[in-house]
Every structure is written in C-alpha cells, then in structure tokens.
Length: 479
Image 1 (spheres, rainbow, N blue to C red):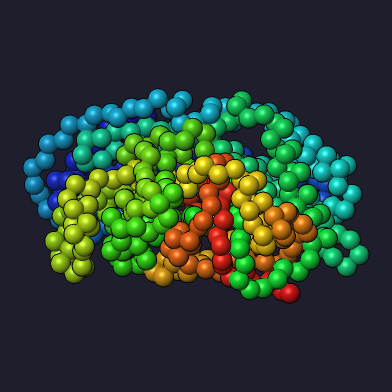
Image 2 (image 1 turned 90 degrees about the horizontal axis):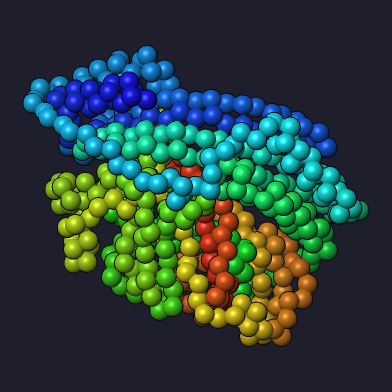
C-alpha cells in the first residue's frame, strides 16, 4: 500500500500543478463470495476479486473523472486528466493520515468461513423451511459476502484507510395451493463477518419469508379507498427512505428537484417527529467509518421535533454552495438557506458504488426516532384500518413528494383488533403531507437493510421506523 500511496501523492501534486482546484483518488481492493440455492440444489457459487482506482478532478466546479482496473494504466490516466487542465503552477502539499478505530463501526472482519459452512447455511435453511411449511413449493436462497480495503487520498492532504466487510443473505419462498401462488421475501445484511452473527438469524429470516408466502395464500383481496394505516416497525423504513430521505439530499434540494427546497428552518412534520441519518451505527448495512470522499461519518439530525434542520451533503456540493458564485446567482435562496451555506461542511454522505463511480450525496442509515406510545395501544386505538407488516418496492417524485409503494404483508384492523390478512395492496400518498398527519408514534424501532439506487449507482443502506399511524391515506387494492 505504501508504494501506491506515494504514487497517488505524486499524481495529486501533478494535477494540482496543472490547475486542479481539488483532486481525490479512491483506491479499492476487495474479494467476495456468492452462492445461490434453488430447487433443493446449489445453482451457483462464485469467488471474485477486484482492484481499481478512480480519480476525480474538480476545476471551476466541473468534474473530470477517470478510472481503471489496471494500475499499470494509472500514469496514462493521470496524464489524460492533466491534459484536460493544461496549467503550470507551483504547489506544495503536506499529507496527514486521518484515523478512526474501525472496530467501532464493524462487527468483525472475518468473511473467511469455509466454503462448506457457507453452503451448509443455505442447505440447512432450505431443509428447515420445507420441514415446517408444507405449502412451500419453491425456495431460493443466496448468501453473499465481501471485504473491501479502501484508500482515499486528496489534495487537502488527507489520507484515509477503511476496511469494509459485509454479509448479505436473501430468501424468496413460493407457496402454492390449488390455483394460488404467493411469494414471500426477506433479507438479512450487516457490516461484519461471520464471527459476530448468530447462525439462527439466517433461519429466522428464512421462516419470515416462508410464513409471509403461506399467509398470503389465505389473504383476501385488499380494499381500495381511504383508510387509517398503522405501519408496524417491522414493516421497514421504505416510506421514510423514499418519501422523505431522497428529498433531503443536498444535490436534489439545490437543483430545485426536491419538495424540501425553501423549507429549511420550517415545520415540515408533527412536533414529535425526528428524522435522523446516521453513518456510525455499528454493524448496520449503511455504516462505514469514512464516507467515499474520506470524511468521517456522523449522525445528522435532518428533522428535529418537526423542524427541518439539515441536509445530507457531500464534499463537492459543500464546495459548490460556498464558492460557485455563478451557480448561486442562478438559484433563489431563503434566508435560512443562505445561513446554511455560509459554514456548510460535508456531513459524510458522499458515497459511490465503487472506484468506477463519482461520489454523490446518499443516505446511510435513515430512520424516524422512536416516540413514547406502546405499539399495541396504537392498534387497539384504531377502530378500523390496515396494519402493514412488510413494505415492498415503490417510487417517489422528489419534486412533489408524491409516492406509490407496494405492500407485501398487511392485515385488516377492526375494532382495535388485527383480523384477516389482505393482499394486492399499495400505499399512495405524499411524503411531506404524511409527516404532518402522523398521529401516533411507537416506542419501538426496527431496521431493514437494502440497496439504494440513484443515478445508476447502488449502495448499501438501512431504513427504520417505529410503529406509526397515518389517519387517512389512499390504499390501492383489488376489491
């Protein structure tokens, strides 16, 4: 790594001398494993190794980017970027390493479980599902792991090293009876290796998927119309991630692509609602010690007691908002936004899929902080409504806040009691409107891992909510 570091330092000096305002180099070396079981047999296993480097150069707030997976081509990449700049100025740089205790962020770093034991996890879960649930006709299981070593060097003289492990387990079950087929899906993911995870967790996730598929076999078609909806904490934070989170990413806000533009400092949610994005939660799928620009991750309170307080921002956008006079002259800013950009710094939300991608503002672990109410009492206090136990995929318009999400598991609530399961439901609404209408917030909090997509890049995230109640929202149904 020392030889590479010296090579990267010299490249940064060259590019600064050629006129770059800012340069960062992102080097990544990793290994991974993936296995899939389907129809009672192992369908595929694969091992992978990857190594590459990406160089980002910023000049006059324009980004020049190049990458290679062959370090022998690194000098050519530097020269190509240098030609794009064509200046010759004196430069002096001192480099200092920034360090954090990686054990504070990751569970462990051991992904070297023997191949047979990884395969046994899949076979064991498959066997137990089929033993317990006779109506399960198909099971697909996969397990994926990896460990990436990351080195980030930039023209501010910062050097950062990170070591990022992960395990991702997914299960899809198909239940069948007569002319009815239903599916259930569940995933388990964390930042760590196999030493810190109880193997029972894989089986718990497997049973959840199987039970969900079997429950849907006897579910009635969902009603359509306006309903009170209780969103259980175990449903996952899709709604906060999509309907709120993306709208609080600074690039979307200041390009007028967010409904939260001009709302900084204003009330945007009920006074008991606090929304947080935290990249430091140990072992969570969206956690890293540093973001992909080398900024230490942190806890960012986005909405506090209903008031919009902050945005998720990376280094590039913090530069741009403070110094790009031409850009600032073209956009309107509220007094609160003008105050915000005076001292804006990266919140550690600069993330990229890999060395082959430019970092952009992204969520990490995003959630609504828990309230004070007993989750069971929220249901008991609901005369008629729908209890959502599992959210599915969906889409959101960040400009308006309008969204539509599928519901993968839900039940009717009648006279404060959970009655029968329903299927084919979806939630249709508006994120900011819902935040202002939630009338109950539970003391519990659960998280669901996932892969977030934006601008063609996928990154690991975790989303969470307490049990909460929306007094009236449109439910799309088939009945």
